[in-house]
Length: 189
Image (cartoon, rainbow, N blue to C red; front, side):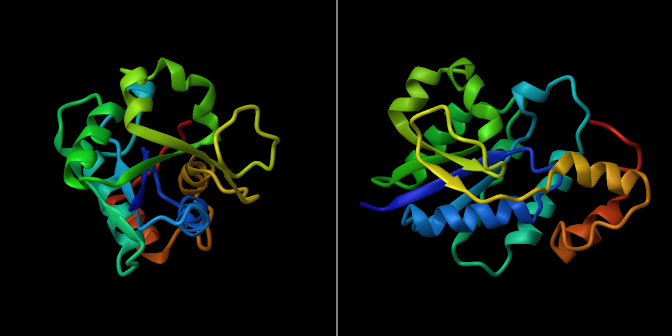
């Protein structure tokens, strides 16, 4: 059976940590591909400022361009907010008929997983794998893709706002979009 990874998130901005763990998941889980799904508006971040969905989609597209293991879906960006994972999973399941879907999520979301919209339906449709950058011991039973990577989107935003370089933290194409769009000029968490 074909196995496809679905990697949702705000990706504000996408960085090398996201990409390295997606590649590791592709290899370790034997995935045909990993589909990145930038959130239009995450229901868990409704009151937090974020870059436009279009800018975040552009960064994800630029960072994955030319990699046959990676695909990008604009499904959530096109929908009215908020973006619910179950809707995305149903859409991808219909598009990728017969494939086993493995939803890749950051370890920071595991504790809230049961509160996700229509979680019971979601866990019948996908299995979960956790992407861990911290090196902390897992307190759950999901498969873990682990690599110690100390890069975070919030740190990148703070570096841009304070005029510090982000080279080596994000792909060059993402850095160019951040500069062109003048993203993250003010410090925010």
